[in-house]
Image (tube, rainbow, N blue to C red):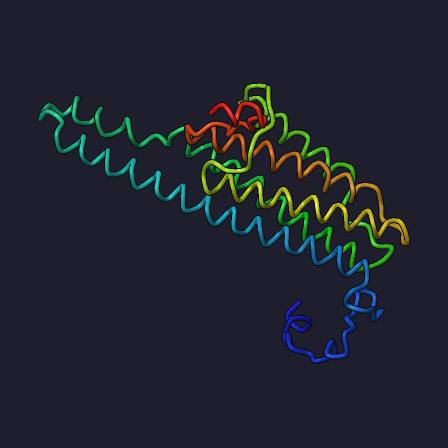
Length: 230
């Protein structure tokens, strides 16, 4: 790995071509390169989501610590009561637990997307399997269980983390379209399409979940008639 990454600027792509994992050189506007690029962009967008989740966790932890210190300072001198006031805030909040779980799930997705990109880079190589899509199905069940059924379309938005998840969702759909386009002219193993299709669903549900945990809730779409009367 160290040798492969020792030189980043090779200048071999100055002519508008790039090398695939099997050594083949293709144009940088090749359908395979377009699909790889969209998957890479999706992974980068998830990095933004994770950075925001980490910041949210840190902010929640700081608030919890500040509350703990304030309660300890104002607690009665009685040792048992003071200890009770302190230890009650040492337990991580459910919000923190949920954010940590989502972060772990998204990090696992990032690794799988990197593998998926490698599969696209090497024609004939298989990295993503049906079990990876099933893993996303399990995640969908987990986060859907916390939500009420949708009665109306929703608008992207709410918290910053949820908004970034919606951005990731739309990038994922674009990556899926690029993979479908590639599959029309070259072989793409079905689990690749399945994974991206399922992932966009997960990102949508995750955005709703994040808003719910933050107390924001869904932003419902309003029909033209209802907007006119508002």
